[in-house]
Length: 192
Image 1 (cartoon, rainbow, N blue to C red):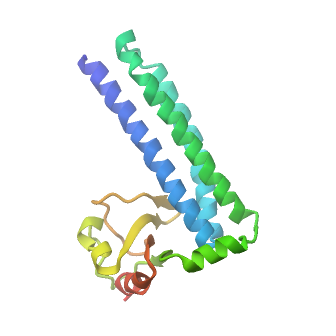
Image 2: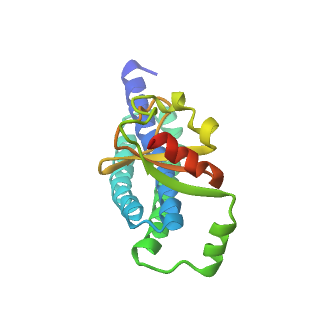
C-alpha cells in the first residue's frame, strides 16, 4: 500500500471508530434516559442521531471516493456494511429515547425490572473539591472504589464516551452504571 493509500486508510479507520463509539454511546445514553426517565439524556440521544446520520454519510462518501485499487477496495465492503450497522444501532437508540420524549409512562414490567435489578444507572456532577478533578479516568479508580463504571460524561452541552485518558473536569456530569450500593460512594467521590 502506498503512503497516500495508507493515509486514506487511516482516515477511514478513524471515521469508522467514531461511528462505532458514537453508536455505543447512544445506546448507553438511551437506556440511561429510559431508566432515569431523563428527558435531557433522551434529547442528547436525538441530537447524536442527527450527528450520526451526517457522520455515516461522510464515512460512506470517503470510502467510495478513496480511489483504492480493486483488490484494496474489496476489503472495504465489510467496513461499509459495518457502517450501516452502526447507523441502525443509532436509530434503535433514538427509538428508545423517543419513548421518554413522548412521555410514555414506563410499563409496570419495566418498573419492576428496574426495582429488582442489582445494577442501577446514576449521574452526579463533579465539584471543585472532588479528588477526581483533573485526573484521567484510568487514575480515578472509580470502579474499584464504587463498583460503578462511567458510561458517559456530559460536558457542557455535549456527551462524550470517555476513554481511559479522558481527564475529569469541574462541572462534568458523570453518567455511571453499576451496583446500587456504589451509587452513594460515587456521589461522595464526585461531590464531597
